Length: 163
Image 1 (tube, helix red, strand yellow):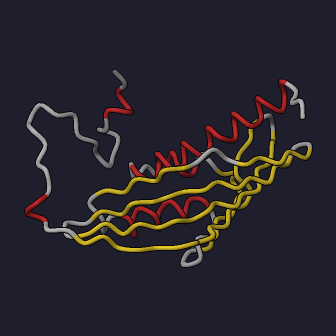
Image 2: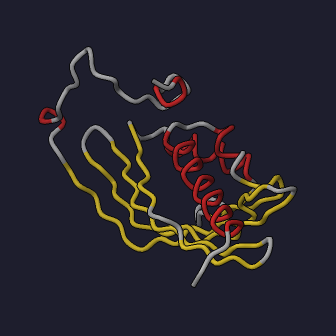
Image 3: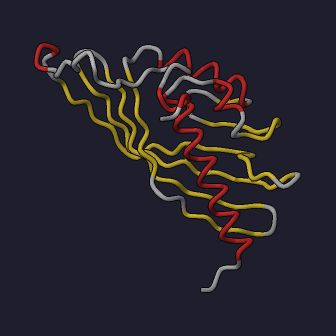
């Protein structure tokens, strides 16, 4: 199968949106999360179903219970059909508390639409595949030295400043 430059570009743009949403989620950046959806977009995370702004607010409330989260997203599987794309993306998400790590295997099943030249999420359904919790002794955790660059869950994170 030979892909055109336009198809390759669409796939890259879609992948960038998926990565931006994962980053926005882990940084608790509502603005970044909302920007990944069309204004009339819809997110179905099972325990939340609704519009992008409400979704971003919900993420901030729910994920604030964890010290850190990290969403590892795989390369999306993109099926283009004109200005619409069906996209499946595998994800392993870590949700770290002082005493454990809740690990979730899931897939984002998205419908992207290109409107006014922009590929954004029109509808997302989160399909959960498995979960487990890894317990650990808080006293055994490594403490980063003062001169380490440590991520933050806000716009003070190094990724917003650059290097």
